[in-house]
Amino acid sequence: MQNNGSSLAFGPGGLDIAQSFFKPIHGASPLPTTNRNTKISVVGVGNVGMAIAQTILTQHIADEIALVDINSDKLRGEMLDLQHAAAFLPRTIISASVDYSVTNDSDLIIVTAGARQIHGESRLNLLQRNLALFSKIIQPLSARSPTAVLLIVSNPVDVLTYVAWKLSGFPANRVIGSGTNLDSSQFRFLIADHLNVNAQDVQAYIMGEHGDSSVALWSGISVGGVPMLSFLERQQIAYEKQTLEKIHKEVIQGAYEVIGLKGYTSWAIGCSVANLAWTILRDQHRVHPVSVLAKGLYGIDGGDVFLSLPTQLGRNGVLGVTNLYISDEESQQLQKSAMTILEVQNQLGI
Image 1: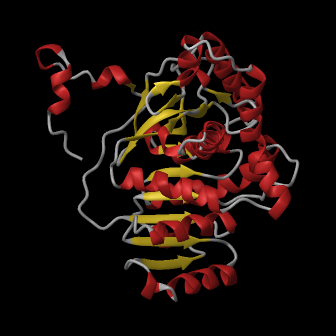
Image 2: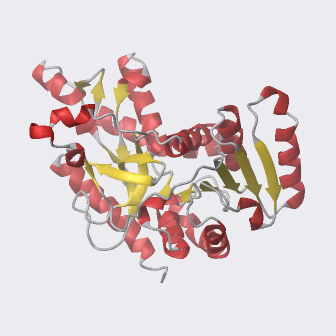
């Protein structure tokens, strides 16, 4: 995406003030140039992986999509099922293999492989079951696509994104977790439902861990461009903090409820990850709450930790993290969320 120069007019004397809005993350690398077709690899053809693949196909986000799984029969069945719909979809090359060579020269690698979350199980409890798997798959994938962006979806996503970063050797800007992108979508829906407005007119983020210690950024909510809480205070309209906490709790419990009812989640995460893929491969420079290396941002110290922050994404992965105002209480909650993740990471020995 080319800058047409109009943004420069905001700064005095032609000063570009974009850097004031976004902060770079540690260890970023420049974008390599390429003229070839775009390719996405999806690792893991379970319910989540196939929901992502199907959404990517219908939205024609890539010219080629490769599927990888250890279950050869299911893998071939899923590939054929998608190929049989070719007459109804934009032209996309669909391939599949148990061999990682099918992922060669991917632009984006989406990792969904992992143990399924059991009803009532915390995302952090999944870690030990998925850590061994990542130790086997991340290095072969990164070696075959050394300039790709890694997008981790497997849970617990924040810790596993850190694991993928360490194992891949990729710069931090090219390792991203799906994080709270979906949580934030649900947050926007619930707020919109309470206010009887369209969710697209609500700007709201869930930050921190994709899990129980997540932080609802109430101070940053706007509806139709109007900051919600400050507007209510100026108009002397009463609201109860318990109502806000209830909405946040609904977000946290949302996935658990779906798992309890149907056994797994799929369609919403499929749309969420496909949306991230679109932003990255189309170089849209949109802001998404995704899991990134948060060291040195929003007062987060103590080690390398990945958690969700409002992040500008493009063809090179992370372009910058939004320099967003948050309240003192929210800052403390975010740092506590970081410590929750770090305590788990410190036990891994990676």
